Image 1 (spheres, rainbow, N blue to C red):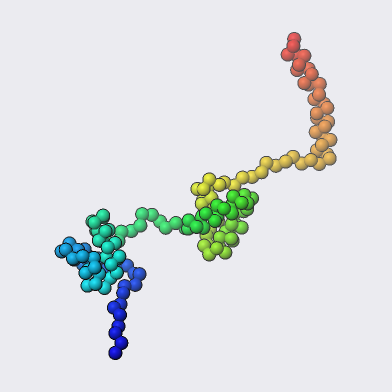
Image 2: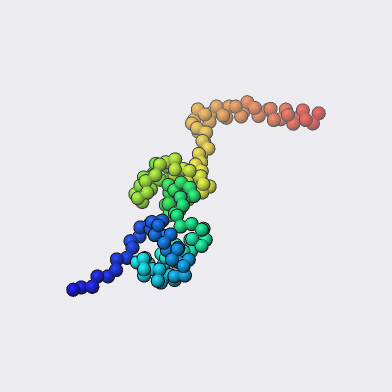
Length: 158
């Protein structure tokens, strides 16, 4: 007959009753090693449960502080790198590259993340249309007003 190894706990959350039992055994003076062997739970798990109980005073798992972030830190850094490398990239291109990375997200989420990083969309100033008609009209205007600046100087001297 082959000897079976004791089944260890998988990486699932332990029940509140089991955590309370670990704490009550610890309070009665039982050590981590004995506690671990008796309940067939890894010693590190027993230690972390007791440490949390000493620190917080309860064994129940509390809800997280806020809403989970849409973008991971890794994805946020990659986004920042891509935008600093190419500032003229548009949000739809960023969104498609983000989907390729395996983290689908909305354009507004990406925009908000960039704003938090201090990156905003900039629009270049429009240059005047330098057509022939525009240049001749501009030249005529300038010639017509050449005397204006001379007259202003004479008026200021008087």
